[in-house]
Structure formats: structure tokens, C-alpha cells
Length: 82
Image 1 (cartoon, rainbow, N blue to C red):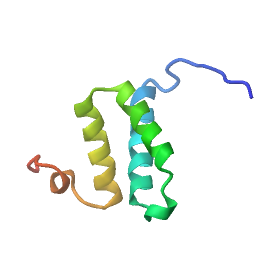
Image 2 (cartoon, one colour):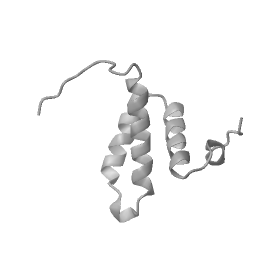
Image 3 (cartoon, one colour):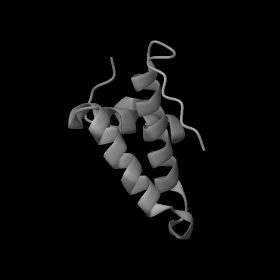
Image 4 (cartoon, rainbow, N blue to C red):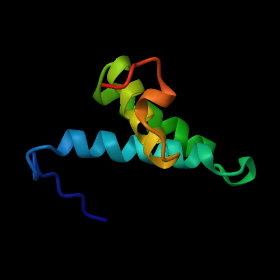
């Protein structure tokens, strides 16, 4: 398999990749335990954490969790609704 490295295809590649990782992690964690690919989720967490600081990582995951659970972000965090 040939891997082609391109830089900044969309102008916001890092944001898209971080968001995709956050959604994937949260989706895996919402599966029944016997279907969870824990090692994949753990590696995705490492990849996400390597791309941003802890606060941003937590925010990205909370945002993904809110969307998956169809709740407002303020319902999952201590952040008051704006």
C-alpha cells in the first residue's frame, strides 16, 4: 500500500481529524462492551491527545458525545448554556 502524504488539503485538516477521532472514540464507547474495540479506542485517544492539549481533547470528545446522545453540550459538562 502506498501512503501519499499531502499537507493541509482542506485548510482545516487537523480539526477534521480531531473531530473524526473524537466521534470514533465516543461511538466505540457507546457500543455494548462485547463489541467495543478497546485497543482501537485507546490508540485513537493517544492520537487525539497527540494533536491537541488535554482541554481541547476533552472538549472535542464532549462535543461528539453530546451530538451522539442528542443532548446539548451544557448537559454533559459544567459549562452553562450560552
